[in-house]
Image (cartoon, rainbow, N blue to C red; front, side, top):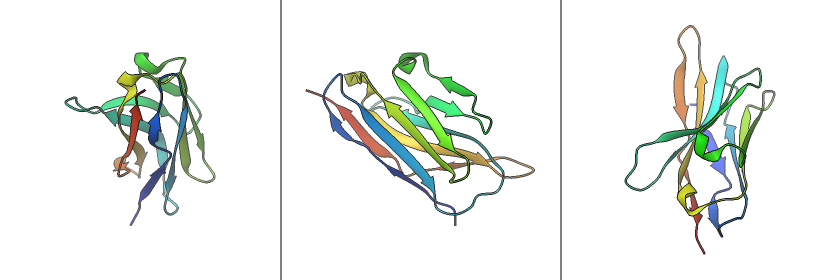
Length: 118
């Protein structure tokens, strides 16, 4: 059974930085995009950042210039470097992997809490 194991969440002051990491528990066939979503209290889950197997990236407008997504295709890991964190970045962050052939399926991590507060 494929599992996505996340790490790196926590409590940080405004302006601080955190790095989230996500590792796939075993070799996954046909990995396409990898990314991070988040869900803030009372809100729907939203895309934060995504990266294709070729390295093309996509960011939510609210995090552009502050967050950087990266991946290691050989290790099937994806990371999210978050800087200049704001209280509105507080949310549970979820790792997402789209994989499979011929139909892509979504795989999700268990979520890691990020809290930005003074």
